[in-house]
Image 1 (cartoon, helix red, strand yellow):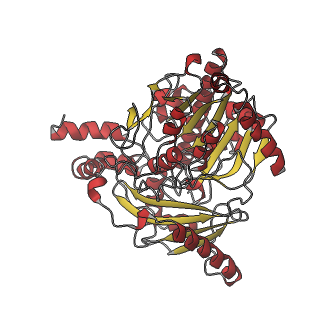
Image 2 (cartoon, rainbow, N blue to C red):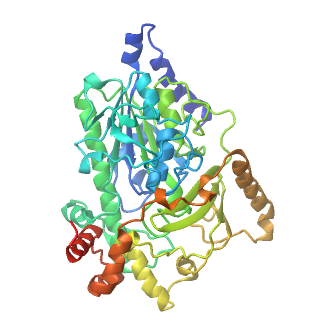
Length: 505
């Protein structure tokens, strides 16, 4: 598809926004924005080519809107990623790169959440919706904030005006809804058991870095079951808009908050940890399905939302709006992984259309870091850990369990999409490696990467999962043995048992 056709389709946003001279009339025609974040998934939708899964609602949104084929996260964990999306600034620039950190520290000036600008433009900002599982109210950003209330960034830290649903009188509105069913949790078995279309484990296609066992196939099938459930939830939100007469003038932005919650996915800067689904749909402004192949970063949704609302973009933003055709398109995307619970990694990735360069600043740590929380929700890791001890994994699969990491990695993501062949020391790719190193140096010359600073551990509280796992190993080896067999005991249930034994409230 030609870039000019995308520009024409999306610039109609600005045309409608500017209808009328009077303020009242102008606000009437401003589009609503429904921002949907699906947790912990890569491009694992039917419309992106994932086998065995059915996603008719999102297929239709893609077929009648714009599907972004090269959208990548600036981080592969939820809270840093959400921090960049709500501010329009790379999380490592605003010191929001460590998972669930800095919750008592205000954003430094001049940074602000996009909801502050949207409110000034006459928008009602809404968090969550009762239609979806759990209410969709997750915010999870790494700076001082409150769900509701005013914002001045000094004494007032409210991000949204109301919770739970959007009504015609809220227009124009910005609504953020999280679909959490795809996040690992104790509900996965229940969702699968109630599904009318249980994904057949025999039909799934596993990437080569997974061992092909019945347990891992079933785990993958359960993941796809959650995606189908999530697709239905998107349909419920769209139906609600239609019933209230707001569908045509509501822009739908659907994106994953970070990559797939499994081997090499969430928490890692490989393809399944960074490559995100991104679909934009708006009946009043976009006609026909389009596949946009430019490089898009997760942070860019912030600039897109503001420009759609007619808000002038702050100069400090690193985000780029998808509405306006960029005369100097992105050459690369800078992604990071820093502290996640008790495990610190300082991995960086430079992604271009053709290559991914990775720089691992901490090399003396296995990718299988035995992170406490993940012990509860990674059946594939437990199964493969056992196979690795027996020497039954392929070299590619065993790499995940190696005691150290390579300091640099380089992959041809077009011809080697599973990133199996590290080209960093291949003489034929010497110029490519130098160019990618140059991009890394370019970003760091222009920005201060707070993820490389010493950590203030007081601002990064330790997760309770560490104590729970330690207790299980000592007191409940039966549960540990279940984990080793690929059976998820459930973090919630294990925590209850731990609290009961320790006589904690």
